[in-house]
Image 1 (spheres, rainbow, N blue to C red):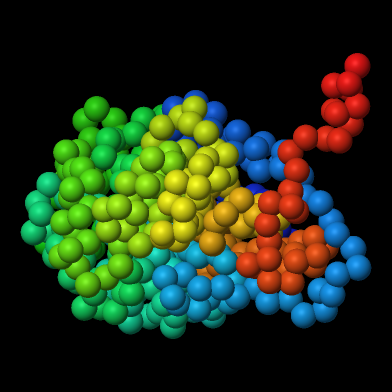
Image 2 (image 1 turned 90 degrees about the vertical axis):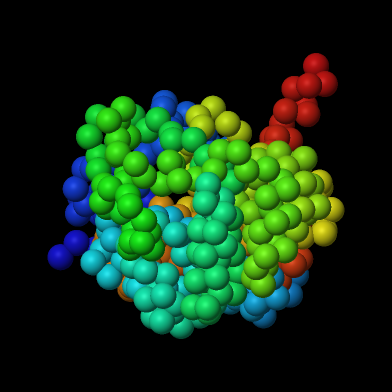
Length: 366
């Protein structure tokens, strides 16, 4: 019997062997040359932590709140589509795992299970992700379905107006299933195809003309607080705050839409400064270690989100695999906090980080 994975990278290696190539590449891949995908790990690894001694860290509290909801540690589940590619129970398993871990799951509108079925299976708080659609009644209708089903916030993805070029998927001629959330629409059953002959799908019903005024309109026409996802510039964070958003997710969509962008953690401080405490700021992108979470919190994020690791956990062991991935992150964050002399997530600050070796100062004097 193979040993159990001890980190998320090992979960991915096992999942890669269990998934078919098309599904694995769809989950793991990114846009064009995947430069940003590779850089993200390099940037996270380049940020240095500073351990501190003789601090009472005997009692550590990882809990925080997001939009007023208590979560047990500052990690949420990203709205990633079609968990069914990794496990037959799909988002039902993920929702149960999120509840067991004491955190929020954000359900993608491209889920393999209906938003109503996932809400029924959930044992913790859930948010719902959607887009601005060309059909404004559909935009409000999806939000109303989420509200009626018991979702407590609406996550609006802004950075997916244009169909991306994902070359792994083109080479594999990848075709993914449509979501039952769109069953009422006249769409092809194969909505995740990336070639020139791709049938009508998600990108075709999203509205490329949407503007900040549309965010005002949606925020005024739903009772759910709105969080916007896809912010990579401070000015867009400021605009989000001024047009009705209650939170922003600093995200480049897992590097899946535009290549050669900055890593999200590089732009996080700019967005935090721009919103100036008016709304909450979260971040996703490349989180694989508890130390990654710590670094994001030190740079101003209230919480982080994870996407691809959920699929690795699902593929290996369903609900238990997702829970194990989340518990790994929690345990690693706990240890990192202790070694850096921080006993609460609110006490994690910029003083715990560095980016340049002190030796460089000596060399610069020459």
